[in-house]
Amino acid sequence: MEPIITVEKIRKTYDGKRFVLDEVNLTVNRGELVIIEGKSGAGKSTFLNILGLLDTFTSGTYYID
Image 1: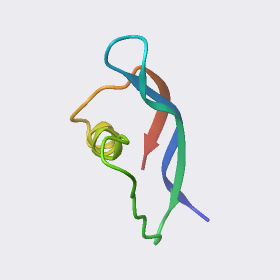
Image 2 (image 1 turned 45 degrees about the vertical axis):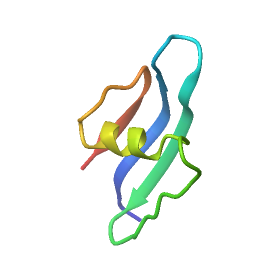
Image 3 (image 1 turned 135 degrees about the vertical axis):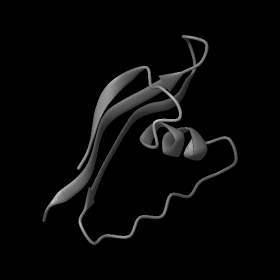
């Protein structure tokens, strides 16, 4: 498999105390379809905004090929 997106331990906090995202990991291989689902306020939009460079993250790394 050839990873095109790799996310490692992404964390996001707005107030320095409560994590909106807490060590999120994800690998997407070429040709895969990914669906992100969850409850309201779970951080789905924040996560996608980080991947799209529309928001910053507190710690962690990600690579997009």
